[in-house]
Amino acid sequence: MWLNLAIFAYFINAGVFVADKFLLSKKIHSSIAYAFYVGIWSIFNLILLLFDPWLPTIPELIIDLLAGGLFLLTLIFWYKALHQSEATRVVPIVGALVPIFSFILSYFFFNETLNKLQLLAFLILICGGILISVKQTKLYLYQKVIARIKDIYGNILGNIHAKYQPARRLLINAVISAWFFASYYVLIKYIYIHQPFIGGFVWSRVGSFIGVLTILLVTPWRKLIIKQQQGSKTPKNLFFFFLVRLLAAGAFIMLNLAISLGNVAIINALQGVQYLFLFLIILLLSAKFPNILKEKLDSDIIMQKVIGIFLIGIGLYLLVM
Image 1 (cartoon, rainbow, N blue to C red):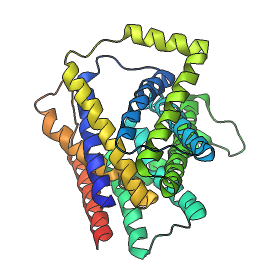
Image 2 (cartoon, helix red, strand yellow):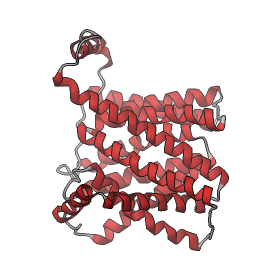
Image 3 (cartoon, helix red, strand yellow):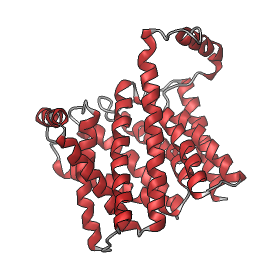
């Protein structure tokens, strides 16, 4: 069940990403503002307690609130990394590291292990996700890659050339966001083991909302958010906008439910399925909406994507065997 939930959640997330391409009239240029807009919606999850009322103990509440705050902090580093480079450079790094970090943390905290087939599927899914998410990977140019590394780092004891400092900052923020993502997923797994799913989910979302209020207490951040709001435009189709946000919330809940039932590392490795859905959706729509959605394809890129799709198919097959 958890495998189907995770795949369906990633499918919805891919659709939400494409819908946001239509809806967003202006980019949010601050990681703080982005975290604020995501976290402010968290308070509405309290409605779910009407279906399953539950109050945590003080220690449980502290852990729930910490998880929500950690998720908000994760988004800040994630969006900061995205701003420093193209998504096609950031997503593969984070997408590859999150399941690896999740596997390490799950092993130490939950004693979760993978059997031989699961471990093979885990590695194959990560490789497939990387091949689909990057624009192009010319693996046959390994000699040029090695030469480029030498150009960037030179003598291992020397200084890194200033020209390449942004790449270093990108790597640091990507690794930090991947570690925080993995830490959040493992912590929320711990919550779901010891608490009811709806109760643990809702109170952790309250932690994100409290984190948003904390952001507002810092004057420079508050002014930045207000300035961002004044410069933004209201979506023309509000019904479609709220429908997309509702779908995004539903996908997030399904993904958390999958985490509560399954293996955290494998669920994170399944992000390659989301990249696959995203690629297929953009491919289908780019011909009709070329000004909004574009997918540059040549023979090398097509071959790379086909290999990625093939690997994801093998990984999913191994999981259901």
